[in-house]
Amino acid sequence: MIGRSEEYEKMFRLEGQLWWYRSLHERVEMALQQRFGKRRDITILDAGCGTGGLLNFLRQRGYTGLRGLDGSTDAVAFCHERGFPVTFVNLNNLADFEPDTKYDVIVCNDVFCYFTDTDLLPLLSALSHRLKPDGLLVSNNNAFNLFMGEHDLAVGIIRRFVLADFEQIVPGRGLHVRSATYWSLALSPLILLIRQWQRLQLKLGWLKAEDAQSDVYLPPSWLNETLYQIVRVEQKLLRRTPFGSSLFMVIDSQGIL
Image 1: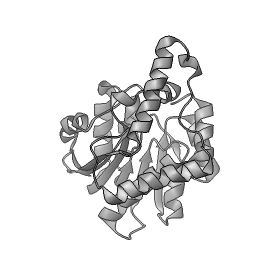
Image 2: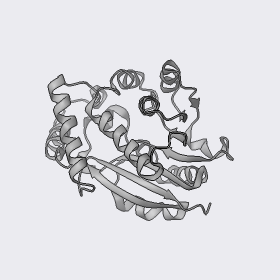
Image 3: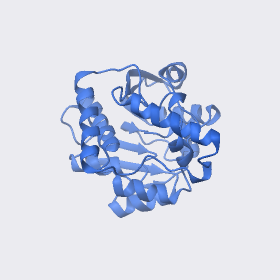
Image 4: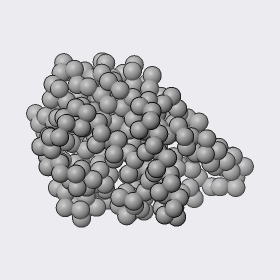
């Protein structure tokens, strides 16, 4: 998404309100609590932190050891506006950035979709190298090619994943997928219908790729809250679901790199 200033501006304004971001941030917090309990002094790196919405969420929850990196000058500027000393780093060069610094947790949400295999494997190795022996890599990812649509074009997504993709590549990087789930199953039919309609419009020329708009917009408050509650109930009732437009993973460090 680097270079799309208008998308970063929308993200900065809406992350704290939009149902999707709220749901994702709560998933991250749950993963932290399951491993570290009530501790708030763990060191957390948000690699590809965007405009700092997750960092702000965690700060509000009392977490203190927060650090962020991003390869967009727009994103870094918005993080500074929030009061976070986020560093500009191209994640392709992560191996050369503070190589001896280790973290309890690294979060890498909706970042891998911008990397080809050639670049993704070194990035996973670099992330693994920065985890403490009992550390966690928490990662949300765009899932299933069926969900490709206007949003992908608007923010420059080049790929989507299924769990098998990561199960094949992370063991060789000193990592192990501890838990994973697709989400949101309940909203999948609606999302899929919208995305397929968008693809049809693109195919017929009714929608131009250069005019594509992202999903980062705030619906009416009643709808935003309804969508949030649907996802929240699903998360409470079902620890793992087999389908959804996103794939959320908690990955253990094996401490071998």
